[in-house]
Length: 215
Image 1 (tube, rainbow, N blue to C red):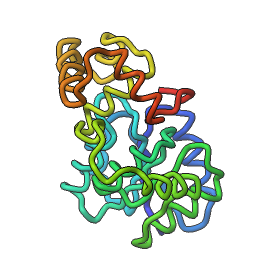
Image 2 (image 1 turned 90 degrees about the vertical axis):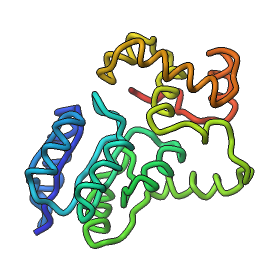
Image 3 (image 1 turned 180 degrees about the horizontal axis):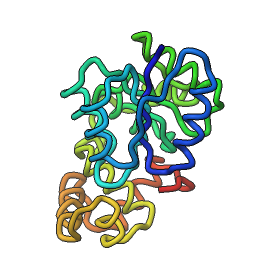
């Protein structure tokens, strides 16, 4: 029996995932969490084989969560299930220790296949994401400006590019507006951009973020 943990801030998403897995032979949903802190507490208290993890929960950047969980629970396999179809997120997630990357528009059968593959010690990437990753191989070898950003800075950059205000970002990340402003300053400095408008133009030019994504 493969024991699975679910971490997503949307109850409807967790309900759907639980329904799919519990109606498939060989799976047991052992626990659920709705934010970063609860996810850490869950993996510490509940033995499991696979964690299905959303990247955009309140309080913590998903990639940072992957790193911390793998540091504390190296045997726990992590399948990222997210709205982010950009290869930048997949690359960062795998570098942090994830074993699979699946977008939320995937069919239920693919979810089962992904959890099964990851639980068995393999690596899973959806066909769509595999195509994105293959295309990224054609990028210049030298590091692009956004590659200099930390995972948290990249997350803040994504939110700025989507049109969120400093206050909105602070509320969603559970930090102060001063902290977000500091991140914004670091992003501008690391990317050597003069102002926010330049960041937006860069994001559009390099197709970093899905303009239709739902934060």
